[in-house]
Amino acid sequence: MISTIATISIARSYNEAKYKTVQIGDELKMVCNNLNDIATVQWFKDGVAITGETSDKLIFRNANLSHEGTYWAVVDGVCGITRTNDMVVQVEVPFQPGVETAVAGGDFLFQSEPNPASDRFRIKFNLSKTTHARLTLNDARGKEIVVIYDNIAGSGFHNFEINAIEKKLSNGVYFFTLITPDYQETKSLLIMK
Image (cartoon, one colour):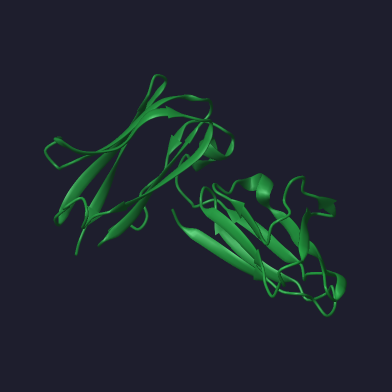
């Protein structure tokens, strides 16, 4: 899982906006810096308090288009109540033919990133509903060599990071396949160390 960390500090003026772009399905993490032990925090998005978000970190495990917006935190500490600078978050959809299916909430298997890969790569998929999903990696002859996921998966984006060295994947072409009761898709991956 890839983390995109956005750091927010106490603003001198509310015009000091910062900008962060994250790809759909990646983790988005915002951190409120320079807090003392007794400070309390409340996170806001587009002017509305986010219920339950009162720690120094705001984390979205799988970013989607609904996470786009302007975020800030109100901090109550020893110096009184202050507001952080704004963090403007944009969520990008990687260009792939058919990716609009995933954005619209349909089932979709994304191309692995990076491709070609050397030591680590990511595989993401989207499901329209909670269902059983099986994600496997096969060698060029079709032999299954790694089961990445085989369980019930909730609707939405799922993101897996695979370490090619730990899995003992040598240089060559591999195929990864997502199978659900309603969907099946296979894509290729090249490993070059």
